[in-house]
Image (cartoon, rainbow, N blue to C red):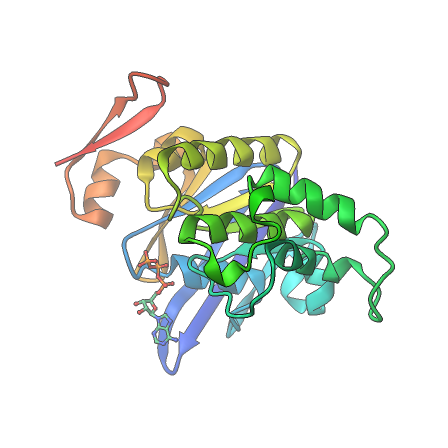
Length: 256
Ligand SMILES: Nc1ncnc2c1ncn2[C@@H]1O[C@H](COP(=O)(O)OP(=O)(O)OP(=O)(O)O)[C@@H](O)[C@H]1O
């Protein structure tokens, strides 16, 4: 199986590296979680992988091709990013915002995307955002806006989906919906890379995990083998033990 190969990615502000020579492989059609303390560089890393943040050096390879070297529109047909707390100041409707996800698939003059309306409707439905299709997005709550932005990313029909704290803003039921959706997308062959604060979520669902600390990779590998109590103590400074969620039987992290 090929992988998304992130190689020596570095992002600097002035002399300060925010992301410092980060490299990892994300299995294609797998779910990779990026975890780490506040300020570790998770959002910056995702933005750099997406080509939204300029990387001073490094590559993001898919099938040997450097996605960062592609024109933006071409990259947007392969890869979509849902940012944390992305602001939407334009008074567009939810459907208009999701429609923007189709623009990389249109001809440069617009049009040429005959399936657009169907894809947009399906994306709204899948993200649980149909009820916001006619709403002004500036009036939506954080969780409602998050669903619309997820729908926009789905409308891009990407092979790689980057999610920054996808369960942020979501109530408990919506968090479970999000987890289920990620599972479905992965089963369909989409490569999902998500920054997550919730280590239990990462441990229960991610195939692989990248642990960031101070802009560098502190550990990387299969989830259960990587997120050991010692590593969690070293990186997060807390005592932790893995236990089981009594309802799902999946890993649950106890801290104290
Ligand atoms: N434009 C900038 N100028 C200076 N420092 C920045 C800039 N953008 C980000 N940083 C710093 O880079 C570091 C990494 O930020 P980033 O948002 O990537 O971290 P994060 O791991 O996503 O954090 P969190 O868990 O709090 O969301 C932080 O210390 C942040 O203050």
